[in-house]
Amino acid sequence: MSTTIFAEPSEPETGASRWGGRPIVELVFLLVSGGVLFWLAFESGGYALVPRDLVGIAIWWTIALTVALGLWPRARLTRGVWATGGLLITVAAFTGFAGFWAKSTEGAFDAYARVLVYVGV
Image 1 (spheres, one colour):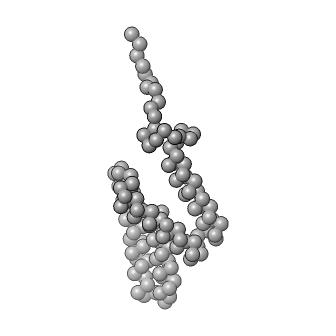
Image 2 (cartoon, one colour; image 1 turned 120 degrees about the horizontal axis):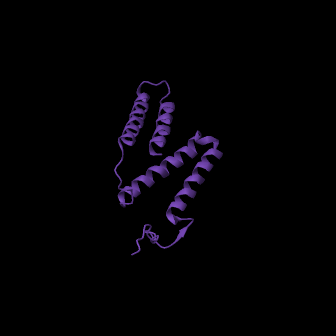
Image 3 (cartoon, rainbow, N blue to C red; image 1 turned 45 degrees about the horizontal axis):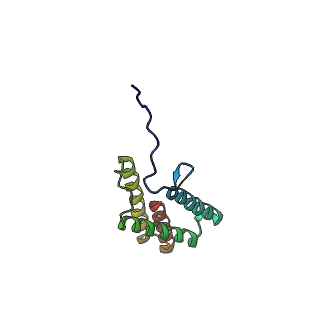
């Protein structure tokens, strides 16, 4: 009687095309996110208004579309993720309210937009 300890590897769930043991979707995500980070680093680290706002708009549209189309991962989030997200949203709210008492409303709104990009990331 022979027993099998290790099963044969199965085909990937999201299609038959794999490269280096990873699904193509993961590799595309890796290349796109790495390219965006390189571009932000090249554009003064993302502190300039235009690159940061472009990335922020792209991030929030991506989040909205993946949730609307049901592509968002359905795994339950841990308490640490909820705590970190809640703290970032609290910082964003306080930064947004700072426009009411700040000397420069434009500067406060710029900081608010920056924090919203951080929340999206």
